[in-house]
Image (cartoon, rainbow, N blue to C red; front, side):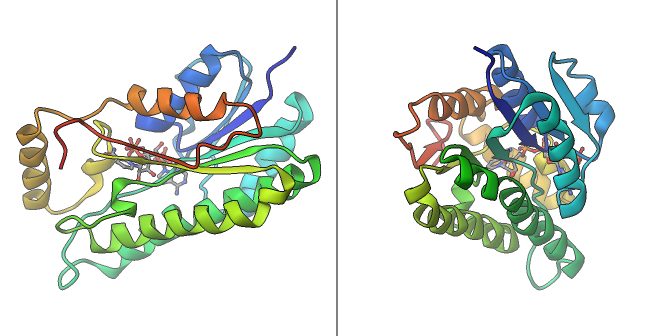
Length: 239
Ligand code: NDP
């Protein structure tokens, strides 16, 4: 039987790209979204549509979904993975950086949920997997605005899970610790980047994106009546 459609935001690098490879390897058709469409096309995965969608653009998100569902049928899994982390101190950080993080990490995630939710509820099945963070559960230095976005993701996940439980739609979250990706590279303070890199070495390195992708697949492949609500996964030596 043909595997159902999986939609992944922020699939052009890091965790999103690893999740795309994992689900493609298991035979799922994919809709991959990111602004850098050349990067998702370069993954070169079969049965995959790649669209240059900024998750803050709700209409573009819905149009890409409609186009893909016409080919592969209804989305059975949405992985809300797109995110930005711009570390900074609140007394000096540019407010535009707070806005970008809340726009992408929170409003972009809500756009994704709204694009798939009505159809999942009507079908009485489907899964929404939000990539939160350990920073959605505890604080870290220079992370104040970022943890604000990730605590929001954790709260939205839990609230939505309760709201749609009666429809048998699963809502779940992964809370990764530090993972080797491009995430840190967008922070503008070189001092903060250097401090973060130093922290990574003190724990003997961090997780690989594939470690998160395996967890995502494990959660999804459970029967629809089994909801692994969240997984927190980090390098063993991360505090
Ligand atoms: P990367 O920077 O490697 O990937 C981020 C992805 O998000 C890219 O594909 C990027 O694509 C996409 N993205 C950013 N802004 C937008 C936008 N406006 N519209 C669409 N896509 C966007 O980082 P990670 O893989 O690490 O991050 C993935 C998720 O994991 C994020 O939500 C992050 O917060 C979370 N996370 C990461 C951790 C880590 O240590 N790496 C730890 C905990 C959580 P493009 O630029 O092409 O649009």
